[in-house]
Image (cartoon, rainbow, N blue to C red):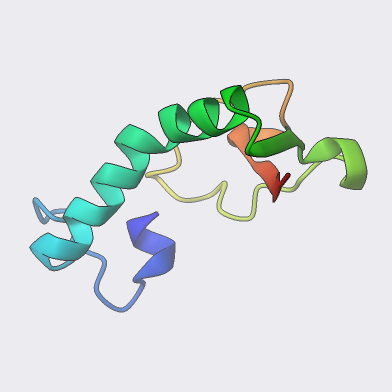
Length: 88
């Protein structure tokens, strides 16, 4: 996320990937807490989600050449875990 959200700042050799500490911490929080938030919103009926490949077909991996792209495909939700979310 850092490489493509902040390409002008990204540095793979930096502890914060070249980002300010605040921006880095926000990405870490999103990565760490995002799945739980989506699960909780779905549990209380506030969010309905579906795999991105259902309405649109297989999603391309635009960044597959990046050395940092190490997240494995999750199978059911398109390539590399991409989802489309819509509020209920």
